[in-house]
Structure formats: structure tokens, C-alpha cells
Length: 182
Image 1 (cartoon, one colour):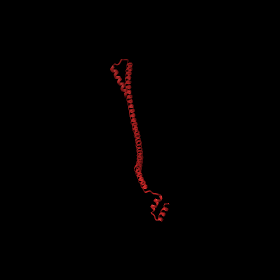
Image 2 (cartoon, one colour):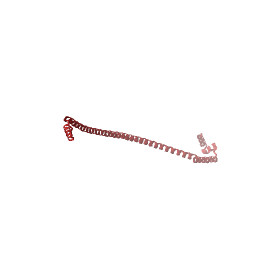
Image 3 (spheres, one colour):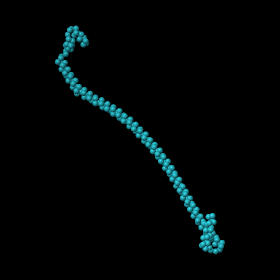
Image 4 (tube, one colour):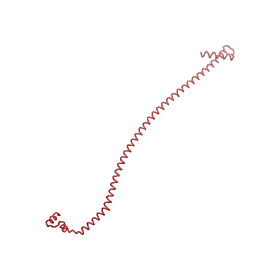
């Protein structure tokens, strides 16, 4: 439609803008006042509405970006912590296995030492028993010699029919012991 107006205005030889303003009834005073009012409203909206909204949106965008960075950092820290936890567990398991092996080796050494100690104690007991048996054997032999000596003296005095002197009794006991030993 505006094309038709330009064509009509060009055909009539008049200024097309003047023709449009008369056709639409443009009031220049009112147009300029509306233009100023629009400029003031646009300025006020820009200053008090758009800029604060844009600032809020920018702050929100920054917070979101920071949150994403923090989330990445936390994710990375979590992965590092998990890796560290795994390494610590592996080290702890290795140390536990090492301690178990050391414990087994120590137990084996203690068992061997106790076995050797028990063997030595058993040998000592056997040696003491042998000594005691030899001492008892010697004591019994001494007692037996003394009894045999007394029996020989008693038998000799009965066979001879007289009482022997202590010197004779001593001599007979010594001769009997010598024959028994030899």
C-alpha cells in the first residue's frame, strides 16, 4: 500500500513525505512529543529495568560458571581422594601381609628356640637322672659291700667260733670289698 502512495505522490509531482504525512494525518508537534516521551521511557527502562536485569543475569551466569568450575574441581578432588584411598589401602594391605609374614617367621623362630630349649632341658633331666641313678647305684653298692662285709664277719666268727676283734673285722671287710671290686 505504501508503494501505491509513493507511486501516486511521484505521479502528482508532490513530495512523497509530505503526501504521506497529509494522508495519514501526522501532527509534527505531537510526533516530536511522543518521540521525546518514547526516548525518556526507553532511557528509564534501560537505566532502571534492563541494566539491573542484565546485571542480575550476568551475576547468575558467573555463579553458574563458578559452580561448574567448583563441580569440576570437586570431581577432580574426589577422583584424587579415591586414588589416594586406593593407594593407602594397597599400602596397608602390603604392610599387613608383611607383618603377617614377619609374625610367621618370628613364630617359627620362637618355636625352633623353644624346641631347642625343650631338647636341652630334656637332656639335662636325663643327665641328672643318670647322675642320680649312678649315685644311687654307688650308694647301693656301698651299702651292699657293707652288708656283705658284715655277713662275712658274722659268718667267719660263727665258723671260727670266736669273736673277732675290730681290727680283724676291718681287715675281713677290706678283703671282701677288694674281691668284689676285682
